[in-house]
Image 1: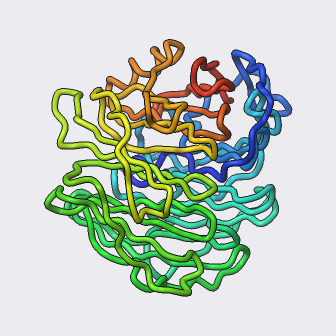
Image 2: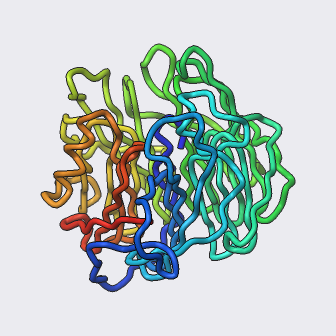
Length: 377
């Protein structure tokens, strides 16, 4: 689960399958709104194939004077978007690594009513985004957040040395509660912010190590009833990595070696037993720098990151594909902005260009074979 350095990616609660939708080439926000500036998308979260929220900013360049985030909601799978209230917070991406404590860069909705905006601040809604209130955690800035059953997990911590020295600790609370408790054993240090994945009643936290050797993978019950412990981690070395958990317990892990000239050797693994054992699957293409992963219940996997195309596997990692209809998006990724993509169901998903001067979203209804552009205003 994907804001952090690259956690402009959406963090999703995946739902069951849905029928194939016909996507319109352009969708506008509002009731619906007509005209207006295209918004820069920061994060997207769907709770079903039809219902989702989008966090955005109207600012089209990296300037510290931008103090506004906006929210949009869809109930038709992303074909149209309308305005809903947003947290009274600035966008974290405008501050080049040192955002205000109340800034946000990502959203997660766990149901039609309950959601969070975070990174590094933490805001909560319990009425579907009609109202937001600022809250806090004892561990400091929020690095990542996700839902595991009826529990909310949050990774907190601070980074120094340009993000190359980070601490992390996992906290857990019942959904709808402000009683955050530190999860025993779920703490440590690493390179760049730690990443969180959840499935059922289990949580997983994944962190790169300072020597860029074997990463750390910790897991345990989301309610903190038992101490989290290390799991055998198949990557012998990693400069970057991506962890995804699918409903039902499946785990995907991708590891990338130190990159150069837009290329990176990558390896990929699957686990069906909560990370106790792993099997290697096909290596993803070498282009770009691995940053995030998302996996559906049926095993559709999206890989995204900096300077790379969106890589799609529809057979649990046995093969990887790229879509010609995303070539323009991948071309923009070559300029250094990561292309963020996430599954919603086995066939539905979305992607967006993670840069403050990018205003395009793409939707798929056939497992990433074809993508339709959507402009949100």
